[in-house]
Amino acid sequence: MKPIDAKAIQATLDQWTGTPLYLHLETTNGAYASHKNAGMLSAGAFFRNAEITYERATITGDGPYRIGIETKLGWLYAEGLTDAEMTPDGALLLAGHDDEGKLAACFELSETPFPK
Image (cartoon, rainbow, N blue to C red):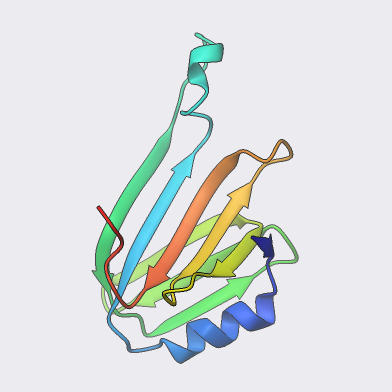
């Protein structure tokens, strides 16, 4: 993955406006490593293969970045995003990594479902 190029990401988001897509959205504050600290409360969310069509999508910030997506029924967003790539199969993958390189957020959009 490479650092986010906000202009390139916005161009991709604009291109997919009105297109049925699949969304993968995941956050964690350390659930993968909470066994190292018994007093730590792990919190996170995992949502895979939600079918969405958005009316508007925007990436904002100077890094870390935030993506907001407006659908007919409301908004969804992810923040803390630092890195991005287009996968060989055409999916947009954005991730937020902390100072130690650990995953904090993952936001993916694709025209085809993600593997189960």
